[in-house]
Image (tube, rainbow, N blue to C red; front, side, top):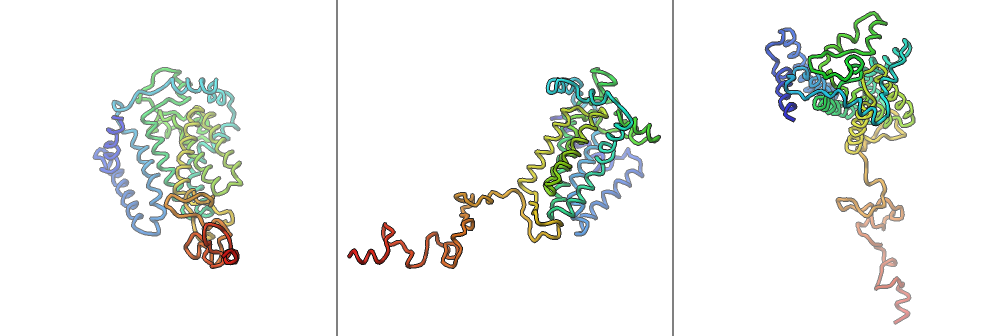
Length: 359
C-alpha cells in the first residue's frame, strides 16, 4: 500500500539518519546505542547473542517509529468491524462479558500475565531454551519472534482497528489518530499500587489502534509452541499460560476474541514454518544443550525409510537390516548379491547343480 511505502522513509529518518529536531542528548543516546550494537556484532562472544536479537530490535524500532507516520498517509480506522465480527463468530461480545464482573483479585490475576509476564517471558523463555533446548533453538526463537512481530505491526498499520476500551468510552463513533491510548483495566492496577505504571505509557502508545492482531496472544502462543517443542510433557502447562494471557487481554478490555485468534494463528504459522525448515529437533534422551553430539534441523522426509527414493536420487538402502554384511549391496555398491552361489544364471532361479543335470 502507498502509506506503507511512504512510511519507510519516515522510519529511516527518525532512527537511522538521527533527525535534527530531536534534542541533542537523545540524538547522542541513539548514536551510542547504534555504536554499541555494531560493536557487539564484531566480537564472536557477543555476536551469538546480539545477531539473533536484530529482528527484535528492528521490530521495536518499527513499532516506535509508527507514531511519526503522518495521519494523512494512514488508512481510516475501523471501529465497527471487530465488534461485528465478534458477534457474528461468537454470538456475543466476549470481552465485554468477561470485563463486566471486576474485582481486585481478578485485576491482579489479569495483571500478572498481561502487565508482567508479557514483557519478561521472552527473556525467560530464551534462557530456558538456551540451557535445555538443542543448540540453535534460542536464536531461532528470537528471529521468529522479531519477524512475526514485524508482520503483526504491519497489519496493525494497514488495518487499524479500535480496541474494546474505545467502544466502552466512545461507542461506535468514528475515531481519528489524534486520540491518545488508554490503559483500560490496567488503570485499576495503577490505582491499586499508587503509582503511574501504565497510564502514561499507554496514553503515549505509538500504535493506539493496533488491536488486530493481538501481539499478547501471538507472543504467548509462540512461546508455548517453542516450549512444547523442547518440553512436550509440559504442554498442558504452556497451554494454560496461553489461555491465561488470552483471558487477561479481554478482561482488561484491550482485545476482542477475534484479535486473539488472529494473533494465535499468526504465531502458529510462524512456528511451523520455522520448525519445518530451521528448528533443531529435540532428542528425548538429552537434557542440556551440552549433551548434544549432533543436531538435526527441520522436519526430515527420510525418517520413513521405505520410500522409493529421495528427490536427489539416493535410495534409502540403510533402512533394511537384511542388507547388512560384507557381501551386501551396500558394501559392494551394487543392487544385487555378489557371491557366486547366489548369482542368477539365466532367466530362472535354478542352481548350478540343476543346470548340469539337465545337460
